[in-house]
Image (cartoon, rainbow, N blue to C red; front, side, top):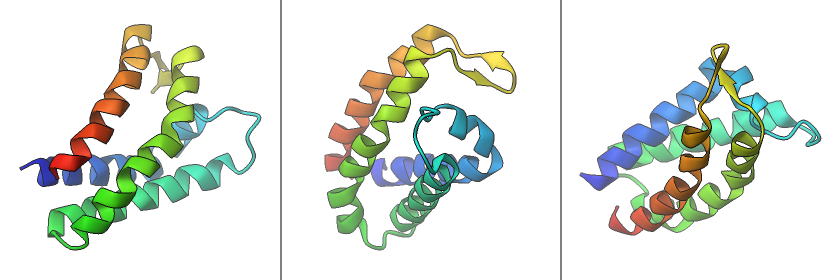
Length: 114
């Protein structure tokens, strides 16, 4: 159950990295180089991890590496909370962007249950 939930969430988020690439690029600090590459690579990781979980292949690898991935993308989530963020031209409420930060730690802890 948890494995499939993480699989769907990761796979879906990974696909969105390509469908809504500019939105994901906007949450990475503008001073960072290779923002588009970061979005694409993190999207690939999410699609691959999601597929692995949904197919129940390499689950132990995903469990060992997913927390590090979540930590690696955390700075973009902080940037999204600190700076006004939009999706589809609509400003994301601050309670959503700030609420997302502790959710990241919940996701990290939840990996143990996969």
